[in-house]
Length: 214
Image 1 (spheres, rainbow, N blue to C red):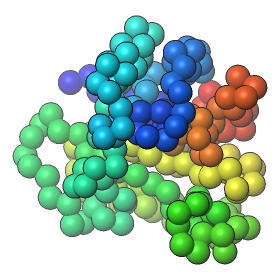
Image 2 (spheres, one colour; image 1 turned 90 degrees about the horizontal axis):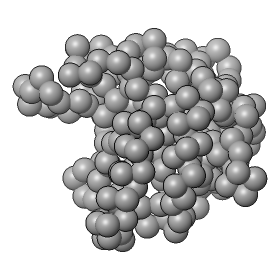
Image 3 (cartoon, rainbow, N blue to C red; image 1 turned 45 degrees about the horizontal axis):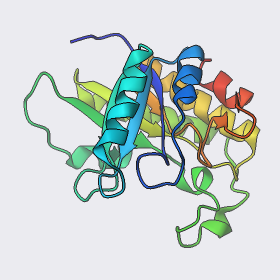
């Protein structure tokens, strides 16, 4: 198994019924930013197999590792870090566990449509010493649970309703913590309201790209 650390981003909203039209140039932008993995969330109820095939081929053609994620399907959701103690995995040396980290949820998802009460979270601050300590502790707990298994931080990100400075600081801390503990990762995500890339201008949001080590 290739044990090199993978650093990447999800193309949310494209193959999972989100309404974004996937552009092959996005794979170039991802590669040119120094990332080496693309995660493709796929909801098979909304997308034809040939579109998924084209996306996989576009990523591989640019030397990117490609993770296919079965998205929005019952029983396939990745575990959040608070859920790990209840997760039991088979004894398989080829298995990679995946987790998501969007905590504190009222900060990362403030104002999110479809979440009851999320508008009341607008303005939720983040960045105090206790906030940072909690993230370090959560990631360390996940690494401890893994006990030598490869662990993939499949999603972490913040909505654009939060101030950019706080979003970038949160992202940098989670990314650096994951790397320090040997976790592969994929930021959530490229071009939705969580996006590190501004499709309208065709450019990266510099604070978020810097937070991702780019």
